[in-house]
Image 1 (cartoon, rainbow, N blue to C red):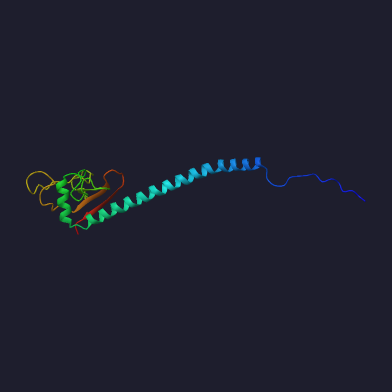
Image 2 (cartoon, one colour):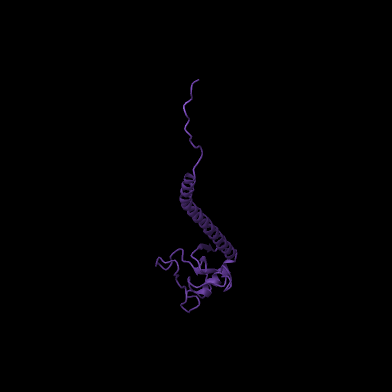
Length: 161
C-alpha cells in the first residue's frame, strides 16, 4: 500500500490581523471622501440660497418696472442721488430686505461729462437743481435692487416710450 504524503495543514480564510488592516485602510480612505461630500452639500446649500436671493431681487425689479414712468421719475427726484434707497424698498427690519435705488440717467450724455448719473439742469423751475422741475428732459431712469446685507444686485434701465 502506498502512502500518501502528509498534507500540510493550511488555514483558509482571513485572519484577524488582515481584517483589522483592511478596516484601517477603509477608514483612512473614507475620511477624505466624507470631507468632499460634506463640502459638496455645503456648496449645494449656498447655491440654493443664492438662487433664492436672485429670484427675490428679480421679482422686486419686475414690480418696480411695472410702475408708471412718472412714478419712477418722482421717486428718483425724491432720492436726489443714486446712493439713497427709495420708497420702493422693502420696509425696514423685514427679513431679506431688498433696497431699491432710482436715479435719473443721462443716456445721451447731454452734459458732456461721460457720467450718466449727472444730468444737465434745464432749470425750468429756476432753482438750478436738476432733480426738481417737471423732468421733461429725463427719458431714462436707472434702477438697482440689492439685498440690504448682501452683495447680490440687479440693475436695469426704464425709459419713456
